[in-house]
Structures are given as C-alpha cells and as structure tokens.
Image (cartoon, rainbow, N blue to C red; front, side, top):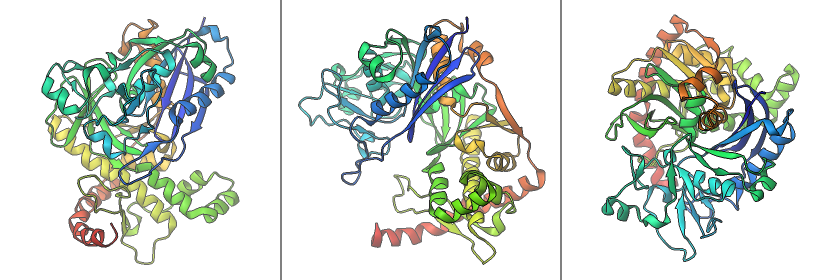
Length: 476
C-alpha cells in the first residue's frame, strides 16, 4: 500500500494544497489566490475577512477532488503558513479582527490589548491549527522575532516576567507549543466539511514557511545556500547554533527541532517586482507571447536570454518596498543610453535579485565561517532557465532548482511523514522524498563580469540615498 501525505502551504500570495506519496512525488494539487491586502490606514496591512482559512478550504477541496487514489491511504496532514503574521482570537478561536500581514507595522511591536473579546494572540499557523483541529496548540518554530516571548534556546515560552511584560501578551493568551513533527490534533468534522480532507486525519506541526521550504529543498548542510524566490527573496543556510547577535544575518527556527535556519538580509517584493514589470508590459507582452506561441513568462524569459549579461550597463536596485530602517528608498533602474529595451529591464531585475542575495549571502557566510559550494534555487522563478543560469553565473558555483515547484508543500508532507512514523528521522525522510532538479554550471566569463558588476551594484545606494531622502520630504 502506498501512503500519502497532504502538504498545506499557505503562502503570501496563494494557498496551495498538494498530496504527495511517500517518495515525495506530487499526485494532485489545489491552489487558490489570496485576496488583495486590506490597507485601511498607514501601517496597517491585513488579510481581509477570513481569507487565509477560506483560501485553504478552496485549495484543499480542489486537491481532494483530483486525488486519484483511495482516501483511506492518506495518512496525515502537514500544515505550513505565512510567518510573521499575528492573529487575535476570541475564546472560541474565531478571529477578533483580521489577521495582520507580515508587512503590518503592528506585528513588530508589543501586543496592545484593545479588544475586550480578545482571548488569544497567536500566529497564522496557530489560528489555522485551531481551525483544523479545534486545539489551541501551535508550532514553536513559527515564533521568530522580538515581539514574541519565546526563549530561542529552549523553544519554549520564557519564564522571565520582564520579557513577558515587554511583549504585552499575558501567558494565558498564548497557545501551547509543540515541535515540528509533533501531532497538533486531528481534523474536526467542521474542518473536514470546509476542506474536503477526511475527518480524523492527524494534523502535524511544521515551522515557518521559509524553514519548511528549506526542508522541502533538502537543505541540511552549511556549505549550501538556498535562494528562495518568493514575495520576499532571501538566502538561507542551516546549523545547530543559536546566533542571536549576528550582524549580517538573522537566526530563525529550522524545521528540524532545535536546529536553526540562518537567513541573509533579503529583498522585499522580490518576485513581485518581476510580476510588476510583466503586468506593466500588458498587452504588448501578451501579444508577443501569442505570436511566439508561449506563455507571457516564457516569452519574457526567452527574449531576455538574448540580452547580454550585464544588460549593456542597465542596473536595478530592488527597493520597490523600502526597508523599515530606510523608508525613503525607492526602486531604481539606471544606466539607459538608448541601447536598452523592455527585455533589458526584465533581465536587469533578474540580475539584481541574484546580485543582491549574492552580496548578503556572502556577508552571512563570512560571519558563519563557511563557504558555499552549491546553491539551490526554489520558488516560482526557479522554473526559468535564464534565472537559474544567472544565479550559477553570479555565484560562480553550480546551482540546481528544487525538483518540485512547491517545496514548502513537500516540506510539510515530510514533517507529516516523520511525525506519523513513516520515516524514523528527518534525514531519512529527506533521502526518500527529496530529489534535486536540473543543475546549471557557471560560465567563468560571465562570473567574472558579474563579480565586477556586483562591486558597482553594491555602491549605488551610497549615491542615491541622498536624492531619495530629499524626494521623500516632498512625496513621502
């Protein structure tokens, strides 16, 4: 009998639910886009209504409708949701207010008890865990950040009253914690009706979405850098030391209990910027794609592949969403001299993503005392051969894409497989369920060019910050 595991990946732009077999092969999937964020006032970014749970229900029902086997062979569910969100719940676990996005300014500040009906403060994973199981339990590995009173060494709530008071969250409002791979509870009758997932199936805890993605990519060595191409783009590697005071990266919780995920500083609205340019081209890009018999994305990648590396001097700085410590920054494309067109702009954005993460990832490697001998590229952008080759050329080491296009979903399924005894350890599960995709080798001449270009790219903000500060005083 083949065993199957459901991997739920509730991401920043969509919810994806995939059924994997015990060898890590996806057999069916459902996907539902999230609604646009609600931004009723400056600093507030919310998921409207009950969008996270609604989208998971839609995606789950589609996945289950496409499942070709006997549902009795589905063993359990692994649950992964967006990190850095905050959910405030009533006593019965329903939302007292919309879920705060990771982009909401309130999530980095102490909790303020302004709603009399509020009884619980948790993450998106805690909220969805309760909707799935009716139990007030959550994974410890989704509480990164200073706003939560979690002891990052023990992975338990702190016993320091000063730290608890600083968070603004009384202990009785916090969920009980479990480790990745632990069973949270079982699917309730109401959740089964909403999702189409069989009632009574065990729901297994994972971690935060980046850590689960890393697990689904098989990341387990400090000499490998994972480049995650999502709405937020970052470089990641792993280790077993908690490094709370690093200067060139930050320490997150990994998907293996008491292991850590080191993350370089990243690019906010990373792949969003690629979509922004695609949409900006509008009908012109769509018409070219139709004429070539390709999707718009494939058409843009094919044409941008004809542009020489370095884009004839065109360079992009990806501050379409400014960092919180430099709110005046804006996105920059510079170096136009008449030779460049829309495909230069497109390739320049791809190059900027790779150059940015190469710079921050190198700083992280230096501080950790490691050297990257390989890169893994995950996320929707990794499906582009052009994107993969640019990463290989920029980093100067082989790069392979994740075999599955939903690494976080696979990571969720791996947690379920380990938690429910299909594999004894996470390493054993990775060996059985994760396989590398196509590998790309670097071109030395291109690497030399990108090394020189990276030195220029690194210094652009030094010259543009003053201009944008002055502009910020005018336009905000």
